[in-house]
Image (cartoon, rainbow, N blue to C red; front, side, top):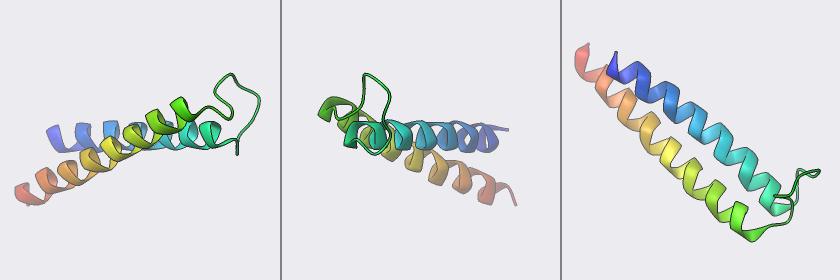
Length: 65
């Protein structure tokens, strides 16, 4: 259960961080976040946290099998 939760949260954080990164970089427009270095950095940090959660979730699931 814990592994699946970590993978779900990690995937959500990675996707959201990716969108925020692209908005901050100006690739995705139409938002107050467009071309904002603040949202670029926040998005990168969140995407990295998502990767860490995905890896940890995979480790937890691998230990159970």
